[in-house]
Length: 159
Ligand SMILES: CC(C)(COP(=O)(O)OP(=O)(O)OC[C@H]1O[C@@H](n2cnc3c(N)ncnc32)[C@H](O)[C@@H]1OP(=O)(O)O)[C@@H](O)C(=O)NCCC(=O)NCCS
Image (cartoon, rainbow, N blue to C red; front, top):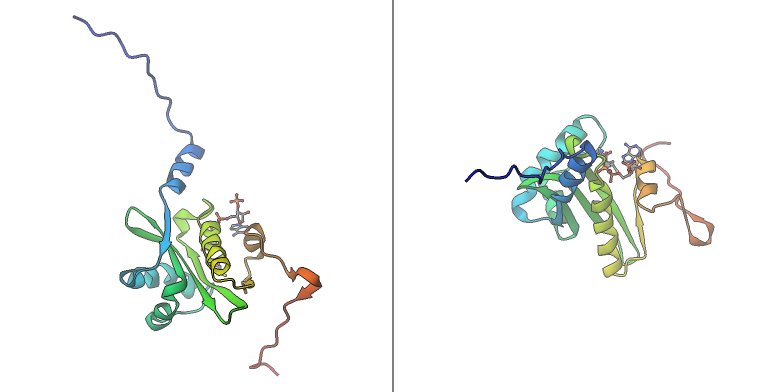
């Protein structure tokens, strides 16, 4: 008996849908010891371009309890560390997303993981020292704190 042609035609996914699926496949999770080599590999192109400060394996290890990776099918495609200075202050460090995964919201999710961790630890302020201020403003950061307080810096190696 001849079979009826299927009318369940599935239109091809649009580029936006494909990007959304790519982003949805990415999970954010705490860093494990076995991730360290992959994290160094991820951040090294950004270090070479002077976008990020170099990190040793020892430094990553120190940050391990308060750092996160973004992972897609076993590949580490994003990293961030939250450096905790005190019960009041922490800093977002070494944030990186692989170039082929950028602009999919992964950076924002990594920063949110840091902010959530700070909140769980009752740390009052989380800061970022960065040239990517548009990105951090999208993540809810601002140049001033409540009460018109501002962060000011002095570089001790410059006179
Ligand atoms: C900065 C970085 C982490 C952003 O990660 P990302 O996953 O691409 O960022 P997101 O997709 O979460 O961006 C969220 C929003 O931030 C803004 N944004 C992100 N990257 C931006 C950029 N380069 N310039 C201006 N705005 C940007 C956009 O508004 C974006 O939303 P949109 O794509 O819908 O417009 C990534 O570009 C990166 O790894 N850069 C190299 C390393 C680096 O500079 N790290 C920061 C040092 S502190």
